[in-house]
Length: 104
Image (cartoon, helix red, strand yellow):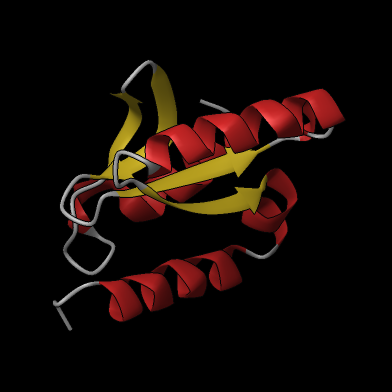
């Protein structure tokens, strides 16, 4: 895992995110997502500079569309956001869970 992935994982593991269980490096279909909550069908991706090129962005769009067709929903953050705006990233995840789950 990258440093930003480790930082976010420290807030997701052991059901720390509103009691939901997240896995890291979870295979889905023929892809692996950074973090995944099966109960929410939520994938969280942390994008580093390898995602900056147009080709990489096109591959990400294709991959995400394919997984969304299976019902997976996505939150994406950059390495910079995770490292420098950690609290904002965590708030965004909590807000997404509040807006998209039946659990308060």
